[in-house]
Amino acid sequence: MPDDKGLHSGHRNRMREKFIHTSLDGFETHEALELLLYYAIPRKDTNPIAHKLLDDFGSLSAVFDAPLDSLKQSGLSENAAVFIKLIPNICRLYLDDKNSGDKVVDVSNIGDRLVHKFIGRDYETVYLLLLDAKCKELYCGIINKGSVNSTDLYVRSVIEKIMMYNAVYAVLAHNHPSGLALPSVADINTTISLAKSLRLVGTRLLDHIVVADEDYVSMKQSHLCDEAFT
Image (cartoon, rainbow, N blue to C red; front, side):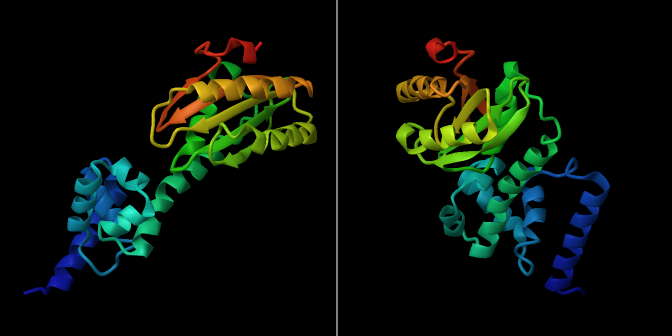
């Protein structure tokens, strides 16, 4: 009769073969997480671990979005917890790379261009997108980690980037990691203040995108501070 190790090894092989032939289409959520954990936990049955993580956090996305310490408190080793945290960050890099070919930005739908940049970010992050006169991307990168409302901390960085790339248009985007994609009063005031500073160097602020999870709000399209975008 096969021992537990043989049974466990056979189950893993069957799961891998199932993935090879069906991708994840034939998997339950806990099975997909179980399979993923094979590569971080080589000598344990990861099925009960996957179930526990889903029970503790409520959903697969919540498992990936959980803080490192919370994953460790649920029983994962630091190595396995880091592996879990890699997944959304790799997804962000994948999407960023996949979308990097087309440099011409659709200014009517800028949010779709930026929303994926916040995947896996559980802290507030501010992105700056700079465009030329034909709306071709010149620069897109992080200019601040922390509160978007600390305008004085990064306005100099924004202007330096604008001067470096000779940008005509700018777009700001930031996330609400544990909230709704709803601009606050402070967000609105910051946007107005930043727009005024950019006008002094001949650059127009096209939009400010507020992101939460996979949702976003365009402050321009929402008409929350029209004076910033005129």
